[in-house]
Length: 326
Picture 1 (cartoon, rainbow, N blue to C red):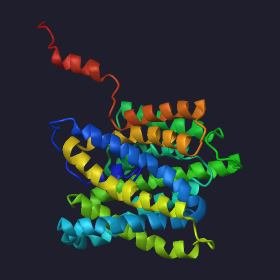
Picture 2 (picture 1 turned 30 degrees about the vertical axis):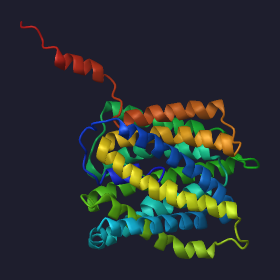
Picture 3 (picture 1 turned 120 degrees about the horizontal axis):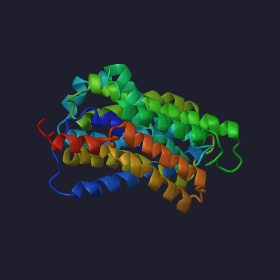
Picture 4 (picture 1 turned 90 degrees about the horizontal axis):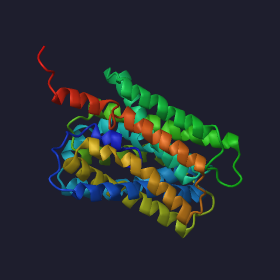
């Protein structure tokens, strides 16, 4: 699982009790570092592999990483019982989004892609509304408006472009990122509907198997004529093992120790690390406009997911303070 998949797995897991220690904070930061780095490695790999082969190699490596863990934890039977929805959801949860992001990173910087990825919880709220009738309150509705306004601000300027890219290509890239976010959101609702109660590791491994099967033939068709360099291969190996496989394990533990709500806050850390990695290792420019749009999007996500609610303090005070008798 990667940069936007947190909504998918958390929908399938029960809410954990409050953590007894602050160890979950360490897991949260590590997860943000790994998922933030995924955009860096995708950009390096896609430059030589192309979009579809990059996505295919990534999910194949993640599958090979997770399969032994599935057998070690004796969860193979859980997968075989629900293999059809697990494989199908894997296409939406990993296959298509990874391909979309890899395509986008041929044009835009990794930091910009990560900022757009932060809209996943907003799309998740919209899909939950449509699928489950979970109508957002005023605070969440305002958050959706603010978040999408931030995306429109990003799309309206050519901030975060790679050298030589034009504005038309940038809009296609941003559209691909948004399509990936929509895939994550639908995968979350479908997981909740069809894989509720299934062990998370079985769901995660099944999703990588499904994505690998779906991308195998297209990746072979678009496989580069020139063998990619060792640097590109190493980037995809790290992407598949650390940023996907290991990130799964960290996220599962985070949900168990801190609960889905706190685990969701990793969404705010991913763009921070992605912008940092892109600037340090790839020389990407961080413009003032990108930072402004990122703040707008993060505010929208915080409101739309219910992590922040307008007027909560006033309501809490009103509830805690009984009215005087008349």
